[in-house]
Amino acid sequence: MSRAEATGVRGEADGVRGEATGVRDEGGGVRGEGGGVRGVSVHRNPLWTFGILRSEVTTILRRWRTLTLLGVLAAVPVLIGIAVRIETGGGDGADGGPVGAAGPAFLTQVTNNGLFLVFAALAATLPVFLPMAVGVVAGDSIAGEASGGTLRYLLVAPAGRTRLLLAKYASVLIFCLVATLVVAASALAVGALLFPLGEVTTISGTRIGFGEGLVRAGLIAVVVAASLIGFAALGLFISTLTGSGIAAMAATVGVLITVQILGSIPQLSALHPYLFPHYWLSFADLLRDPVYWDDVIKNLGLQGLYAAVFGSAAWARFTAKDITA
Image (cartoon, rainbow, N blue to C red):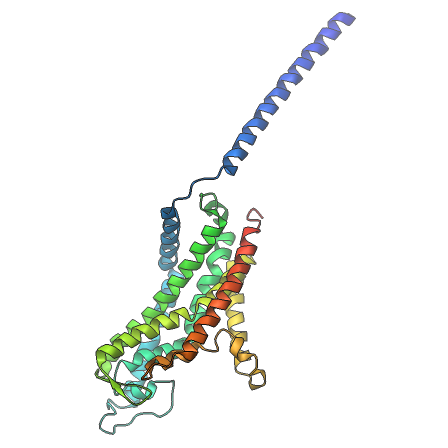
C-alpha cells in the first residue's frame, strides 16, 4: 500500500472515530437533558400532598399486620369486661355486691357503670399495648419501604422528601387516633352489653350525666392518642436510621421497654419528668370536677417537645439519606 493510500485509510478511521465521538456527545447531551428534567422544579399542588397522605393511610390500614394489631387492641376491653363480670358474679356493685378493690385504675367502678370500662381499657393498654402497636407502624414507615425497594420509587413522584416524610408521620398519627378509638369503641360496646349505664361518678366524688361522661370519654381518647405523638416521632427517626423494617420495629419497641424500665426505678426520679411516658396516665384528671389540666398540659407539652426534636432529627437524616444504597 502506498503512503498516500495509508494516509487516506487513517483519515477515514479518524473520521469514524470522530463520528463515534459525536454520537457519545449526543448521548451525553441526552443524559444532560434527562438530568435537567430531574432538576426541574415541579409545581406541587397541595392536593398532591393529600393524595400521598391518603395513600399512606390506606396502605397502613390494609396491611394484615395492622389489622392484627387493631384486633388485639379491640380484644383487650373484651377480656377485661368478661373478667370483671365473672369476678363480680354478675353483681352491679350498687347494692353492695362484690366489687374488687384491686386492679387497674377505674376497674372498681366498671360494675357500677359500663362507661368506666372505656377508662379502664385505656389505662390498661396505654403503658404497653398501644405504644407497641404505634412503634411497629412508625418503625416500619421508612425502613419498611427501604427494605422492600419501594422508597426510591416513592421519591420519583414530585412530592419531595420533606412532604413524603410529613405524610408518613401524619399517617402514623392517624393510626394513633384509630388505634385509640378502636380500644374506646370496643370498651364502650362491651361495657354497654355487660354492665349498666348511667350517671358517672367523677374522681372528685360529684356526679355528672351520662351524656357529659360520654363527651369526656371521647376527650380522653383524643388526649391518649395525642400522648403518643412524641413516641411516634421517635419511631419515625429510628426508621430513617436503617434499611431493615424488622430492625427498626424491634429497636423502637426496645426503646419503649427501656424507657418504661427507667421510669420504674425510684433512684432515677429526677429523670422521670423528662421521659415521654411519665404523664401518660394524666388523662385521669379529665374525670375530675372541675377538670384538672396541669398534668395534661405538661403531657402534651412534653410530647410536642419530643415530636419537634425527633421529627427534626428524622428530617435531617431522611433528606441526606442515600436511597440508592
